Image (cartoon, rainbow, N blue to C red):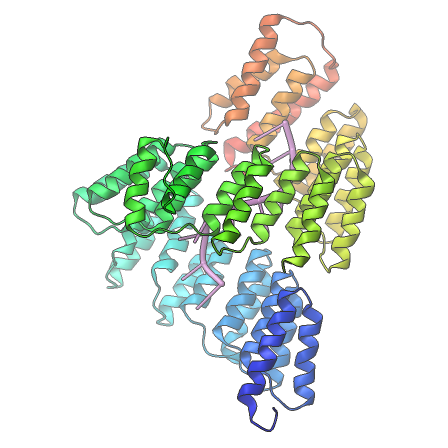
Length: 566
DNA sequence: ATAGGGTTAG
């Protein structure tokens, strides 16, 4: 094999390395690279990319970086794929410092960065809410003569819209025309998508009509964004209207148009319709579809639409969420029959379905089955199971999976900590939850808005002096209020017998443009109801009431001045 | 490798 030359040798090794990495045996894959070195069969860039990708998937980005140094020292030049894999992983975990270091080092280690590399770096900054740096990357691109593509604009303009900086989005557009670049048709798609991203659905639809009236170019992308957004927020009727609009203007729907419409139906709980539509699309005729769905089906099946994992997983998730596990499982086997492989998303959703019902035995059985079907549990799998045990008040079971997670090489992430803190709060072990906050902070994990809300909710039910100490710590470490914060406090006012205060604050919040959600309205309705009943049972002391007022006040003040978190 | 599907707070 070695005598025959490097090519077949490399190929054979690469297949083996990939196989081991896919089975979660990353260390074995890595040791194969050492074997290749030993036999002077120099690994090619693909071999390195496989291990680097496997390390990134496991969240071991520093190891991935180490491999880049190893390959460089062995005269193997990293490729664009190498860099974009790690860059993307670093950005995803929010490590912009390391990402930037890598980005800056690319010209010395390999080919000069391409548009994709620039886009990835820029996207990292946008996700980290650093539009200043994102814009600098864009300018660097322009200076170096690297031409931006549709995605470049998508990332930047969508980012500006998302963070409410429309004038910057406009500035970017002006820059574009001054620079002599001809905006291509995708630009208008991006603008519509950007408005959708910013949650300005009505503006997006108005803009869409405007563009069509002016006869400017539009593709399915703009419509797909509108349809996807409508579906996501439960306006499946509007989604359908946009779809009709699209047909009327002679724009061909794509498979993602159909996926989005299906997702809308699934989310809305119209699982039966969505499922039947799916069957229709596959040529199995069934009666009882809504008229709109049938129209979509006709158009879509003419285009040869075949449902993919996304569509199936949307449906399976929908069934799991409403506790219809048997339907979810039926769909899973249907997937297999169609030649689609249930993936880690499918399985995690099913495990979560079991966990939500407290069926931990079935959840663990599904977990065990994963290995047989070649799936490696990931951090979401472990978090789901840990959460399941916490909900069942089985802290020993939670610890067991925490150990398993650790043994498989996963470090707890912020979600793991949030789940465990919620677990402790739910059994009134607030002190343990606070200890966990200290632990995560000293471990370099950054608390998020869920952390804040979880612990604040815990503090509200604790005795006052301990609650105050906890809040002081929390305000210092993670003051990140959002609409859930408001809801937590409104619900505490109700629970502690002060519905009038809930209503008073509800009134105050409606003065400012803060988005209330379904739960806010339900809570306010409950407060109103409680007040009408005039039940005088108040469990809260005047001091506690003041404490809640204080928390509500700082939340109000913060939300007045800042965009709420997620 | 640039979306869309999965875990956490009310």
